[in-house]
Image 1 (tube, rainbow, N blue to C red):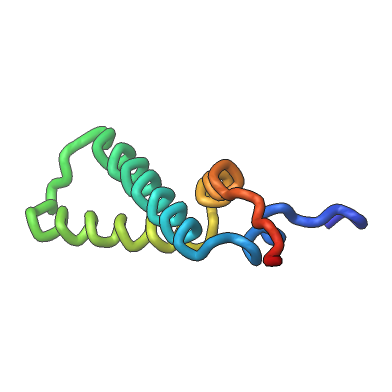
Image 2 (cartoon, rainbow, N blue to C red):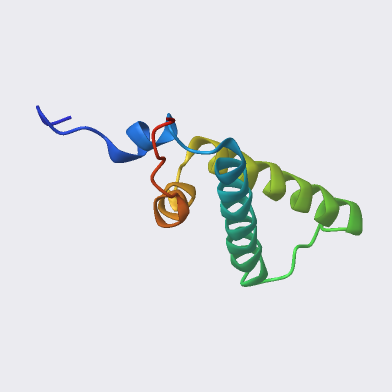
Length: 93
């Protein structure tokens, strides 16, 4: 990190409404899951050993991968959504 420059997502993570963070991460997970699904659909050939069970397993694995990526902020989509929708907190009087 550059001296004197703080990380905006890290600083914002401490003051963000937990419900907003959860919703933003859920949106990122859905987006990443759709992205992975589109990549799988664009395969160049048929899976010789594929079956319905294999397809279901891949869908579950893709969903878990997407949730994991969203939880770690791999793409930063949740942080961008939070920056867009978070309102500055007024100090309590």
